[in-house]
Image (cartoon, rainbow, N blue to C red; front, side, top):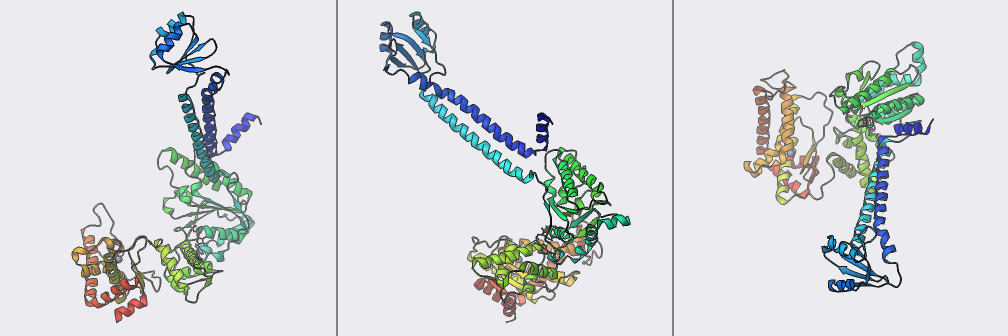
Length: 607
Ligand code: ADP
Ligand code: ZN
């Protein structure tokens, strides 16, 4: 291989980031070196020309004196510069005449020359104080430039490492994760059994002529354990595992996405049997031909390469691609066709029982205080993903560690839960007295109506300690997971949602209501709208789905939505009228203690 070909080859293989980084550093050095060179030309002469001649003198003269000396024929040479004349006599003594540039005309030098004096004009061989300053500034700028270039180059280089790991993709062998590490998700595990069989014994597939599986799509929200499950599949079958993400193929320079797909599969085949996991596969496999832009053409070639590689799987290669996404709807239909990602496994958010199991997994090796009830923790995390639950355990352990404790307490867990749910306690957001009172009545309204309304989840806690997005909140815990929710429960939920505002109105007057109810209003609107347009729970619309158009849901549906909310307000208002004393008691207790538990609230309401 000739040297030129070697260089071309190296450039082709090197990733653009790397080249850019090098170019930056190189140009930085070049510019700096060039500048230094120029600068030294300015700096060099004064050491030679001016400081030489041991016994000569320099004397500044005025114009009269200058003319006198000139007439005496004393000068041998006269050198002009922008701000002064320097005349030299036979001994080498210098006479300096400072001037204001009037000698730059022609007649004076000519006059001198006519008298037989050597006339010199300024060149770079003579430096003035200005030159030194200029040179200093230039060196400064050069150094600064070099630093900037080095920084940019270094930054690119560091980032380049992320993209340009020469050993990319990394192959993991002997993965330690097992199905038992994935709590819940029983159906998903069951659906992966076939893939497991194949990976354990690909030859059996070949012998029987069965079509080997090629791709599995794990579909579900973030943090539900898709990566974990794919790893467990590798662990269970003892095959190698390559963990990639769709974003590693997207937004690259032309051709690099395609090259990477090629490289990925080459490596997988070498390491077969092997699982290729591609997280966020939607960023790689979006529907093609969206537009004719460079970016979309680039994406198309990358996706085409993926499909080609998957088509090309020989029977015995033993490579399985597991893709993960939350957006199966945006994927290119070609991706879902037989022989590609034709197996789809849905990974939902964990239900109560599964949340409990996930807690068990992550609690391992940690000590719990006696007051910790993991069932309560699990119930307190509705809608949380597996990753969120892991996060709660980690946060709780952090709180304990901060206090120098080994055991995690119930308080650690409840604070951890709140933190994960709403972001850290806003220590700066301290309510003033009015806000505190208002929030207390608002939350007390929710709490009282929730406690007194049949068919709502029991109140777990009410608080007026402000968090990231809210001034306070009332938390209800479902006793069970509702798969089909009865209308009566939705109506009761509406009553509780609007109760905060109803309490504000009752205590502070209709004109003093606040913006604090915005998220309640949003929730109530969502619920009422779904009841009317999706669930067929209104008289006038009945069992009909109502589509949203430019004109909204239409007059009838919207008046039904309004009615549902207005009725809820009416019921909540009436209840708070009847139980004004309970509202008062709970609000007062909140002002005093900031946080109340469900049983405490119940006791106050029933008193
Ligand atoms: P996804 O790939 O779906 O976004 P991950 O697999 O990355 O989710 O999950 C992140 C972390 O959350 C996992 O490493 C694991 O610790 C925890 N986790 C998620 N789901 C579960 C589960 N079902 N059982 C145990 N841990 C889980
Ligand atoms: Zn509210």
